[in-house]
Length: 152
Figure 1 (cartoon, rainbow, N blue to C red):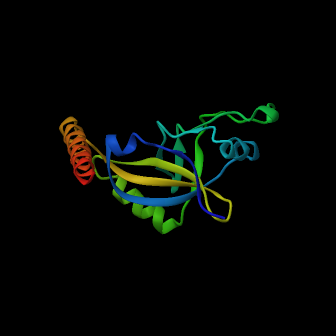
Figure 2: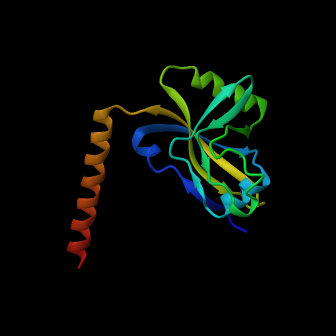
Figure 3: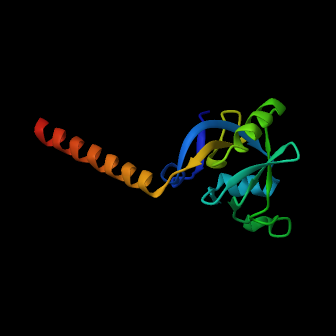
C-alpha cells in the first residue's frame, strides 16, 4: 500500500520560504477519519503552535461526516499533533525566532494507514520575494516552451 495524499496547502510555497519539513501524527475522532478519507479537508489557513510542551494544529477544516451527524466535533477544533519530546523542543526553539511559523503543508495516509500531517518550518516572504518567484517561474516556462518548439 502506497502513501496517499489527501490534501495539500498549495499557497504555502507561494507565501512562505519552507526551510524544514517534519512528518507528524494527528489525533482524530472516528468520524473525522472517515471524512478525511473522503478528502473533505482544507489546510488553507492551518498552522501549528507549541503550547505547554505539546504541538496543536489550528484552523484545519474537516467537514462533518454526514452519517455520524450526532457525534461530529467542531470542524475547526484544535487537534493535537504527535511528536517526540526532542522534536517538540527543537521546533519550539526554531519557532521562537522572529519570523518563523509552523504551517501544515499536506495531509496524507501513511503506508500503515495512519493519518499524518507534513509540517513546514516557514519564514514569510515579502512582496518582492513573491514577484521574483513569479518571474523565475514564467522564465522557466518560456525556456521550456522554446526548447520544446525547437526540438520539433
